[in-house]
Amino acid sequence: MKKIIVLPVLLLCCFYFIPEATAQKIKSMKNIEWLAGNWTMETKKGNIYENWKLIDDNKMEGISYKVFKKDTTMRETIELILENGDVFYIVTVKDQNNGEPVRFKMTDGNRRHMEFENREHDFPQMIKYSWKQNDRYEVEIFGLIKGKKKTMLYEFKN
Image (cartoon, rainbow, N blue to C red; front, top):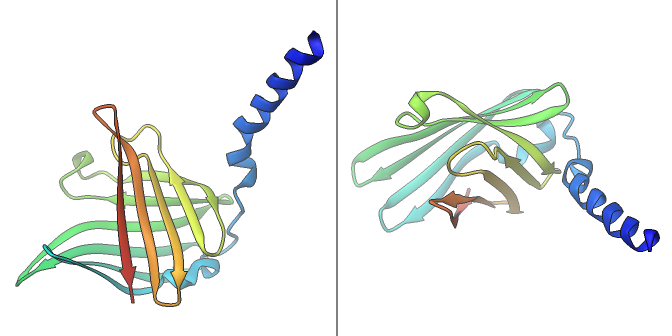
């Protein structure tokens, strides 16, 4: 009987620690240099742009803005920072969070895929970047809004 109880408890412990254990360390921003450049997503309500540049081995900076007809609206500034062996996605949105930056910690990632989480943030709680081809990547944001799951997908091309 004790063996039957111990096995499920051990399995639960393993699954609890798997996300942190499987996160691959990015040792330099050069590992994700594919993100550097000017990216566009076309929509019916205008184009959304993300522009990224590699600053050094420990930092990338990005901006996101929207252009509709002749109006340009700044959406956010973003930093990817390598700090004490961890990668953080730090985003500042002018009219949100009192203009303060919000930090998301990488929970999984490699040279083609990055997942960031901040379970304390209102929305989103998770951000995923996935490289698709030489000229494309996707950003998915996930979270709860008023207790309901919400997912948004952005597809950028170079």
